[in-house]
Image (cartoon, rainbow, N blue to C red; front, top):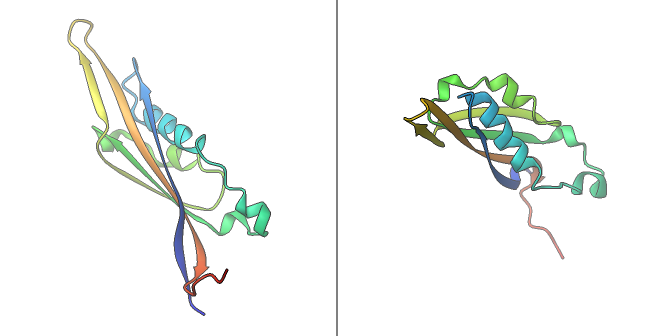
Length: 121
């Protein structure tokens, strides 16, 4: 019976920094938004160690090099965390006031080592 990492959940979120042009803050808020949409009760219900999961976080912003991946990773309380930052999101420029509002998107995928055998009902 072979085991492989199977995705058990995918949640999306959005976050922004309206005045500071802080891409990490916007990304952090996007991850928090995604996390607040989910509840993984299967760990307690099935007696599975939460730290056995892998969590992949993908952040989309207009300037990926301005995101501190270690800060994003700290938002995930359990498991092995991998952070990817890609071009995406949205910058809203206010030419009158000379500001840029940063909007980030996040996708949070959790995977567990599960058997490749089909479940029997």
